[in-house]
Amino acid sequence: MTDITPALGRIVRASGIQTGLAQVFAQHTSCSLIITENADPAVHVDLQAYFARLVPDGDPRYQHDDEGPDDMPAHLRSVLTQTSLSVPVTGGRLALGTWQGVYLWEHRSRPHHRSVVVTVLGQ
Image 1 (cartoon, rainbow, N blue to C red):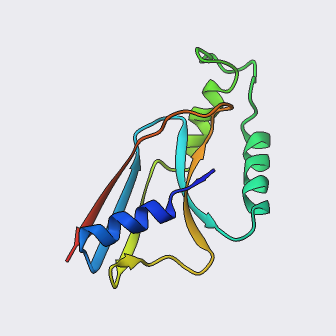
Image 2 (tube, helix red, strand yellow; image 1 turned 120 degrees about the vertical axis):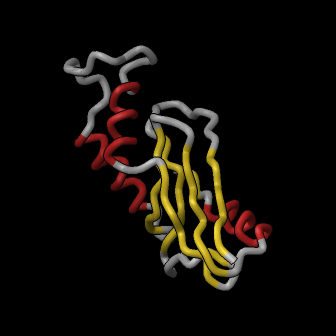
C-alpha cells in the first residue's frame, strides 16, 4: 500500500479550493484506492491477508492469467474495492478523520507504475 495522502493534500492546497471535493481516480484495473487506518501498519497487513484468503492467487478456476497467477485475482480485488473515491475539502484541506489516510493498494505481486487522476471541485 502506498500512502498518497500527502500528495493529495498538496494538490488540494495548490488548487486554491476552500470548500468542495477532491475526486481521485486510479487509471488501472489491478489496483484500488481506499481510505483506511493511517497509524497502525497491522491494519494493512490484515487487509492484505483477508483479501489473499478471499481471492487467492493461482486459483485454477480463473481463465485469465496472461500476466501470471496474480493477474485475475488483482482484477477481482480491484472490483471488490474501488478505483475512485471522493474526499471532502474543507478550509482548503482534505477533510479526513484523525486516523484516516488515502492509499493506492497494489493488488499485483510485483510493483507497477500507477497513474492517479485528481480533480478538485468547489470554491
